[in-house]
Image (cartoon, rainbow over all chains, first blue to last red; front, side, top):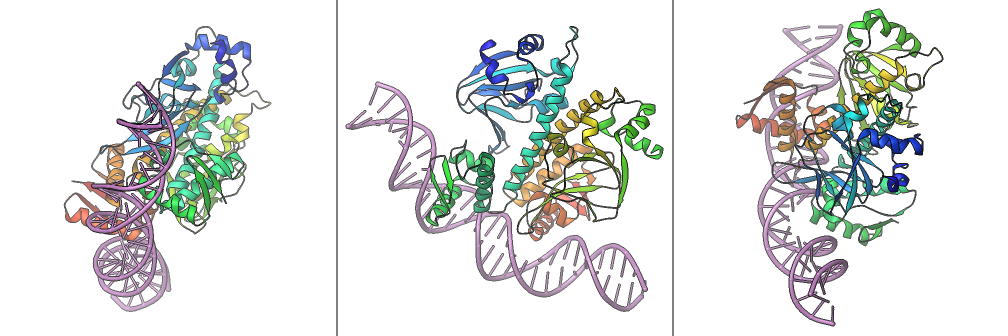
Length: 219
Length: 219
DNA sequence: GATAGTATGTTGAATTTTCAACAAAAGGAG
DNA sequence: CTCCTTTTGTTGAAAATTCAACATACTATC
C-alpha cells in the first residue's frame, strides 16, 4: 500500500489524516487494490453497492445505459477521486449505474460499512472519514448541479458552449483538454454525436472556438 | 420550538436524536424559523451559502434561471426535508441556485458552521448530525441520478413516462399526485410546456395514462 | 354568478435534432 | 509503410421540439 501514499494523500476522503495513520487505517478498513484494463467494468449495474472506489491511477466513467441501449455519461472520475460512495452511504442495495475504466486503472476498494461502523479496535479515524465523506458528497451534489446547468440548455450549441465555459472556468484558462472523445462528449451532453460534430465545425468556422482532438480553446 | 418537534423528528438530519436533546440542540445551533408566502424567495442566487434550510410546513422548489430567463426546476423540497445543505457543507461562498416557496412555508434556518464546528459547550451531537448530513447528501446524489435518468431521454414522451414511472414506484401505486403544475413539470423535465401538454393529451387518447390536473394514473 | 386573471390545451410554421449512410482522417499492428 | 480499425466529419431526409398565437378551462374574488 505504501506506494499509493502520495496519491491517497490527495484523495479528499483522507483529508487531514496523518500519513503514518493512513497505512494503519487502510489495513483496518480492509482496503484492497484491483486492476482494470481500458473499457473493463469496475462495477456493474445491479451489483451490491457495498464498496467505495478510489482511483489510484487511470480514470473511470460513471454511466447509465437505458432499456434501448442509449448511454449517458454521468461523470468522469479522475485520479485520487472517489466513486460509488453515494450508493454505499445511502444503503442502496443494488447499484443503479455502471462504472467502467476509461483507461487502464488501479482502483482501491473499501467496504463502506468498515467506514461507517466504528470497529472493535476503537480506531479514532471513523469520525474524520465520515466528515470527509460528507464534504465529498456535498461537492458531488454541486457537480450535478453544474451538469444540470449544462444539459438543461435546449440546443447542442448552447450545451456545448456552457460545458466549455464551465471547463475553462474550472481550469482557469481558455485553453484546456476535455476528458472525452466525441461520442463520450455527446453522451455527457445528452446530444447526438453527428450533430455535435457538425456544431463543433460550425463554431470553429465562426471563430468562436478552436479545437484539435480533445483540446479546446475559447476565442 | 416545541410545536415543531413532531416535524423535526421526521427530518433526516435529526435521525436517532432523542426528543429531549433536540430542543437543547436547536438552541445551541441557533436555529430560527422564518415564514414565506407563496412564490416568495427563501434564498436568492448569489446569496452567501451559510444556512441549511428545513421545511417545517409547505414546500419549496430549488430552481436555476439562466442568462435568457429560462427556468429549470432542480427539485421539490417537501415537509421535513433539508435544502441548501450541499452548498453550506462544501464551503461554497455564493448560492448557485434560488429557493422559492411553492406554497406558504415555515422554514427553519441553521447556520451550517454551527453544525460542522464543535462548539464550546462540548455538545455531543455534532458527530451524529454530521453522520446524518452525510446520509442525507448521499440520498440527494441518488435523487440527481434519477433526475438525469429522466432528462437524458430524448423525447418529451419518454421523459414524461420515465418521470411518471419513477413517481409511481416511489409512492408504490399507479395512481398518484405530482407536485408540479404543467409549466413546472415542463421546467423539471426540460421540455416545452406546449409540447408537454400535447404529449399528455396524446398519451391520454392512447389510453396509456389518465390524468386530471396534477393527479396521474398509469393504465 | 360575473369577471378578471391564470393555467392548460391546440395548432401550424420554423427550427433543431435525430437517424442513417457514407467519406475522410487518425491510430495501431504487423 | 501498408492495411485495418476506429474515430470524426458531412450530409439530407425524417422526426421532434420550439415558438407564437390563440382557444378553452379553471380559480379566485368581489
